Length: 329
Image (cartoon, rainbow, N blue to C red):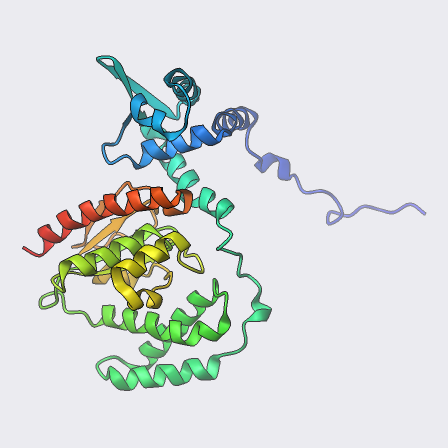
């Protein structure tokens, strides 16, 4: 029996939507050039160097290899236009090609942590999340009673949004309500903040909110002594803070460090901030008039050794001291 094909049985012409041959060849060549651990480490070092560039002599310290070997790897990255270089005297200095910076940032700050962080997992399994609607509603009623200046419906919306956002990455559902309460309280505080009377507030934003942004916020709150308030958030938050960073936070905040957890970025947090400092989160931050924006090119603790994380902490500490002095004068 001959079957008659209908329009629904035929294949869709999806090939026409695929990347072009020339573009695919170019991307493949770049990915091939990047497929070496030392080259990726060099790229990360250059991208996070506060000077905006690195010298061959700096990069040679990343591994026990000769400077000619380092120069060879850098040439490979130059050949695919990821890096540019400039000779000054006897040394050559390397920068990220401005036309490739966004791609490099995406690779180092989004793709890399997702592939090497066993402490982050896909939390798409809705079956493991019991229905907490009654507890969420009860929490909203309690918070609404504490903040009479806000409409109870607004409070309920904030609490439900906070719960839903945190549930996406929750590893242990028993902690969801306490975390929701802390996150919702922060958001409600942002909604009711009076810029004219409040102390300056800084918002640090990275991708996972599991490392550098958490560290920066803790350091501001420690060094400012209440003269500046810091918060942190992530454009794609992880489920837990990176272990190396967690230990540093414990040194800074003591038992209070246990209260920290990755939080998603919200418009409320941006509007409440006087300064927003991005740390490799790309272009996800909404632009709010009257808010000052800065970008700090610092290394990602998720990709660093324990010694590297401590160096990142020292880098952030120096920047924080300057920031606090500027805002709390």
